[in-house]
Length: 121
Image (cartoon, rainbow, N blue to C red; front, top):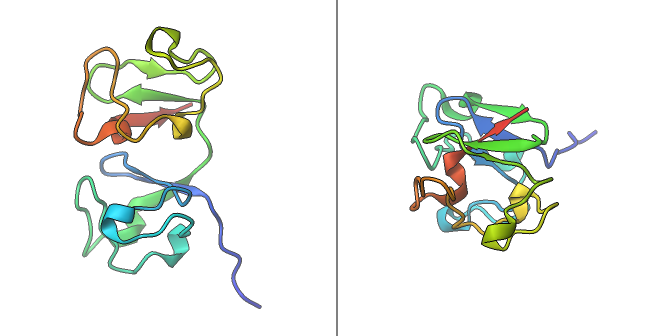
């Protein structure tokens, strides 16, 4: 019997980067829809570069968080609230924000966009 693959997201315990199977990592040759279990054994975190001795074991599965916090200034993105002043309607899931979304308070990590946010609660 084949092992059932999950489409669960995984978070890097070193830097907080979230691998999302829905998005994959097209810039790194990983197609959208690629389950974490299907990533190569030598997969490297695209943010902090953790690999080799730690590899994929640096990632842990995560449940869908409710809110996301900016690692630089502490701003919390809450989907229930959205950001109406920035044209983001209440109810907009974090995953539905554009990939180049940056913190509206400090503009942190413009080059890495949404990966500057940690999932919380």
